[in-house]
Length: 423
Image 1 (cartoon, rainbow, N blue to C red):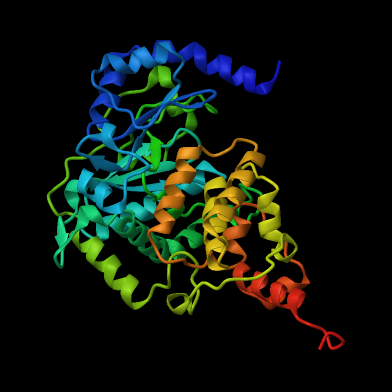
Image 2 (image 1 turned 90 degrees about the vertical axis):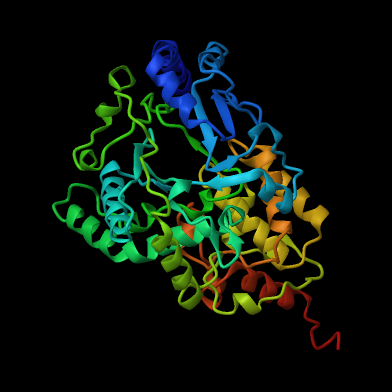
């Protein structure tokens, strides 16, 4: 029997028993208010948009095969009216707010525990005392700062309209300010050789800013995880250090509120500090390129895949992990070299078909739509970002460039440069 079938059978045995609990149903239902939700089945996610009208909707979906439930960071007037065809203005008019959701994940649960504790300390330092904490269901944690904690307007701009820009800036700020301490603490942990030495680990436990995106869904509190059969349980701050995976046994889960009792405007200082830092010190989030603000897309003639760097060629073969990051890379690379919209979308869809588990068309459509509403930006610079999804395979030419766009431009120039005889 295949491993996938064994996992599927194992979780199906406990879904009915677990989700039949009234306290679990209530926790999921209460958290779902004003959020877009989507049940997950083994074959994939359910329809979007969706929402719960009654508590017993949860168990009815379980009877139909749902194994977990996911929801949006954004809060909507009516989640059922959300559509991928809506423009930015329409989305802003429908959105009533957003929560700051920090997703911490790494190879090892102990690394995630360290990261969560350091980030919580930093949030406390910025005056945020009420933070929701839950186990992700796998090897990480979700931290939430509720919408109520943020100022509703800054310099005449509605904060609710600034999604995902403000959450991304805040997350970048948190990453930068906690980076040194995180690496120091993880280094201390690895010295006794508790784990095989892994110099990339400190980078991989950082919050994933790519997940802060329009209509992004995350696992709801007390939802099960398909791969581990563990529950996404809520924790107190003092429980993180001693947390063990066995504590998330769904049959022993104790229900608590994920959303803390937050004070109005509690996160104002954090947001203002993050915006000031971003204006003064941060480089553009997509690439950390020195000249990104001045960057203008160009139109390359006779563009061939032979001129793509090894990382892009590897991605285009189809990948297993990091598909959302890869999509982010491809969209920005293709737009930066002036690829026509129709060709760009065709290449993206052809690539997605090669992935072991393709991304949902709705997700790809929303990311393309969001990108087209903005000016083209360059993809992330080389090394770390690409190493994180296992596609960094540098050749000799890679030593001469810092960004995949530069690689394509120089290779394309060389390929189309007339030789002396032609002159």
